[in-house]
Length: 495
Image 1 (cartoon, rainbow, N blue to C red):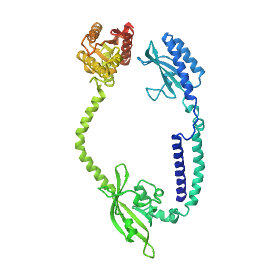
Image 2: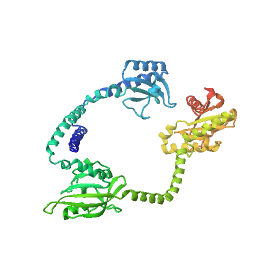
Image 3: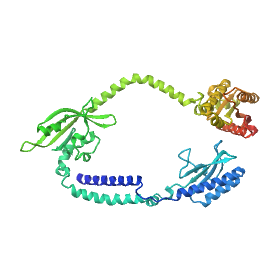
Image 4: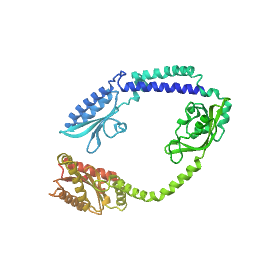
């Protein structure tokens, strides 16, 4: 039975080798391909949608955009949904039914065969993105798609026909070379119950039999060791891990005499070694010449390995304690702080802000959320470089920190945007505070170059039931400030 498995395995190996050659030929472009029109047709459809949507969006005719999107979904079986998303607010302006649910791309940038993104402009400036969700390739039938690919049919033919032909040929050609045919099953079964590894070798050091104990210690099967030279298994000298030159079974074959008590180890995993005490004895012919050898492998690894691991753990514990403490402190800073400005990052701010909001609601106190955005920041980068842009962001962060009630309620929200919370202050005083802050930013000499900023303000009293709603209201107010010409403050209740 084991001989049949060897033939089948060799046949599979030859099939895999043939497939690898075919794939290499395909990689080199030597196998003809069929080009599908699917990608080209999807690109053409996306371009048509983008052209019509840009024209309608420029006229603020979003009802026409919706009708066009619905028509595309009805007429094209390949399109599942279409949506128009505004870049600044990241909200869907127009979308077909279920687009929000269907639009789940694997990446937040770029396009794929199933998720296409097309930028559109308004008055020459990037304004929004059209999102087109196509049917996936799986829904069109995977087997049908593969069958149209010539290389798949060639590989399928070679996998079936090659396996049958190779297995038959190897069975006939290697019938008399299979070493397992000379080992009675009862001998194999007897050796498998032994607690030490036993290997039977021929005159050329090739393994004729290996019991299950030896194979398991090496992390292999007994059949996979057949025909391999025992000296080619990577034997090393324990401790030094140098290549072993004294192999007891090799000396037994050469001297026709037993050699015992040789320590050897072999790598069995990543930084894992199995250590044995190895004995070798010759199988001698009537002439006195060794025709083979028996090698036994007594494992001494388990206790030695556990002791070594314990010693290493104790030695490293004291050293790693301070390193772990410093690393935890660094991770805490990285997890909560923005690396450029030193302010809280969005994640840390949101956690703190939700607690502040809950406390304000519980104590029936007013709380304000202020969104700040540097006006025309892209022009700063384009004209003066990103280094100057970073200096401007840092200067605004310093200015906000100087007047903020609590640094934990101020954060760099993203890019050139900042967010801050104001508590224990009346509406009139909050508006005056933000207006003074706006004038300070716009004043000459505030930053390395003249800048202005837009502000959006919302308050609990405007009806926000959750902090996320309060944040969204201030963001909408900020957007209104930009629509009004920037460098101004807009309250949410003024929109």
